[in-house]
Amino acid sequence: MKKIFTILSVVALGVTANAQTEVVNETFSYTGALKDNGWVSHSGTAGQLVADGSVAKMVAGSSEDVNKAFSSAYTIEASKYNKIEYSLTVNVANATGLTTAATGEYFMHLVNPAGTAPAGASFVARLYIKGTATGYALGVLNNGAVPTGGSVTPTFGTEVAYGTPSNVVLTYIVDNTIASPTNTATLQINSQPLLTNATGIGTAPAALSGIAIREAGTATTGTGTVTLDNLVVKTYTPTSLSTIDFNSQKLNLVKNTKVNNEINFGEKANVKIYNVNGSLVKSASVEKNGSLNVSSLAKGVYVVTGE
Image (cartoon, rainbow, N blue to C red):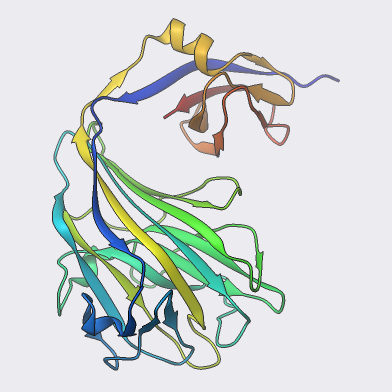
């Protein structure tokens, strides 16, 4: 029997005048300790994190955590849509020292304030890693606070073979334009489907002013031996969201509202699909004139949004 579900409405959120500012651009083109080249060591054994002239090197069993201040701090504004992102290239040669735990270990995050004693409560937009005998997987968590007696649940992507670089973009969004503000983090890994996470407990910080690299665990189970390169952090001017005219956007974004197994899109967008109870059931990044397979969703009515 042909399975059909109906898109009840399509709302595209357009951000007006969303100017961006590059606040960190780190190519690790020097030789020596990161703490001697614009980074601050704030935990662990100082001087363990080094660059070799082309990449920064995390070493299994090391304990140093460092952070680098933005050229200008980013204030998260009330009643505004706030967005900040960082991108870099990650590579892992082998499984040495890499945790195999389902929840992984985080090794990079945004921080406030930057400096010698950053506040742990503001460790957000965390980038996670874990491994198997054949490869490594990267994951994302929006906030880092843990409920009493509980644990956080990062969202992980598909395993990448050891020795294969991952170009990643991690975006942290604080939406204060709605009655119950939200903070979410998304992670794009190479051409994998976009990952979205909002499981961390706690509120968003009032500002963000730096990015940190973290080495954790032991020589046999921790953040492992990882190289980092081409680290860029961008902040976006906080804005009010404008809802684009429904009828015209419906034609531009989604081409078919009666769906069998695929939704066809007329514009490039980051899309989210919600059921009638308001629960997020699928998210992805789609290209113009591309399609998204939704055969796993049950027959029913859904709301699709696109950014």
